[in-house]
Image 1: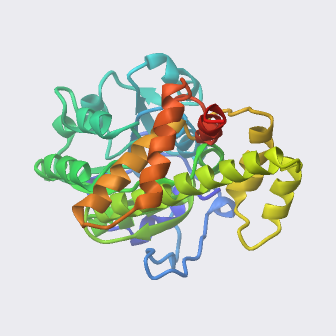
Image 2: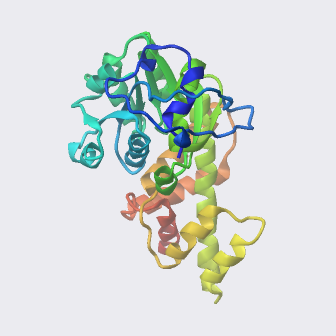
Length: 342
């Protein structure tokens, strides 16, 4: 797991580079290094790593994704302050050493950079721009990183409020679900203030395996929606295949093995397939969020007059699954919508 301190020397000087009162030292053996070969990623070539962790990190939203992400920051030695609408969800992190504040505004006011992982555009806007939202606690020298999956319009709205305070803004939605979040293997799709991207790169490296800088605000949101549109459609097609194989007398477990060894192999199939055959859908990425992302992706396509008939049909299937009470199950439960049509 990467540690904060290795990247400090090359980060531009902003207020959140000042060491927190309770700075902890990290032995040189724990310093991270993750080479980056993609031109879309920030350079990972650093020298003379510092031995102290700078800054105070805020984290807003502690659901399936936010909790393990914040936990990885804490375990890496970062000074983390958390908030969640349901305070009890903060308890496990507080026990690990996190501090707690009663509103997003207070977190932003006491931290140097604040991350937010919210469930949908409405929640993201409320937490950032609402009555006691993070924007009220922002000021020049601070940074706000929204890792929620929202549409570009929402991201630009939040960016406007944050930058209006003199602070910096970065959208950084993640590709990955519960297990990658726990393992620090997320993929960050970032856009916005390049200076903030470079500043928070050490923290992104703690929570993820790779990061891409995509330019202006809105591009990160667009990339994430395209990725999740593809993923949702792949899962729907895979579900059809599992049911068809069983219908014609084949063993769907064997289908999972065959698929995993061929050109269409994807980790999603081998991970989700066995439990789908057993009609079990433990939530790693809730179905309601997949349908939300499909809806937003269709809106993105409409805005540029791009035809997306497969995604449109897939969205309808997920809506049927939601109508059957499967919203909080894993998105692989979309197979149940197909069973209902038989």
